[in-house]
Length: 272
Image 1 (cartoon, one colour):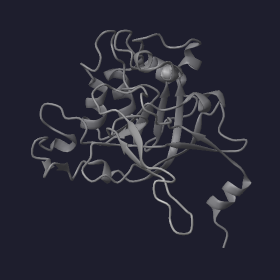
Image 2 (spheres, helix red, strand yellow):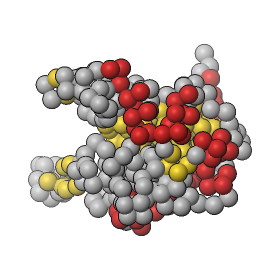
Image 3 (cartoon, helix red, strand yellow):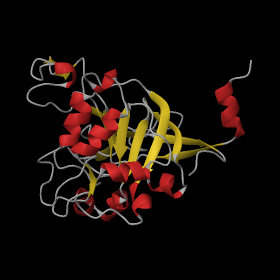
């Protein structure tokens, strides 16, 4: 019996990798442990009788470093997590069993790209607030309930310029604020992502002192957030909608997970 999904893949699918490469010194929020990598065993350290050897890795990193997803346990507001759960009582045995990242089901959903610079005709300035009008102007495909919405500000181009340029503590970082978050929540989306370090707007010199969009989306509406995404290739291809694929690591009770999201586009389809 023919499988429609396999038939579609056989007909031709372009895969856009939306995840960042992890490397020591990569840009990240200063609130989380940095990524480190070492080889505790290298080829030749131990050689088997048949002449074969193996190399092994050790990595250490925070779960909110690199391209990653925020679980509902990540943010509380006035002592409450999503659904009104007490943030202190929820961390049973040092793990968030009901709101941890292990509870996020793998995603195979419709994705929509909101390319804000394309709509504005210019890159977003540091600290720029992406308004509801900007989001509406950027929506070349209708945003529907259950979608994953990705917001490109163009800031992702600074990722390779180093931590100071990308994190933008002094300059500020473009993104939505509370109004934009409420617009997304009203659409009934499943998750939202962006090409910036904290998803939402960071005021110049303000750092992560205020994150109202996190409260609206994670706490009030249970909408997952995906940060530090690579969206330039997808935008350059002129893609407006696509099949979005993401699976977090099943880290029991963790507040987030590194991810490698993908955008799948059938050849010849879903462009603006």
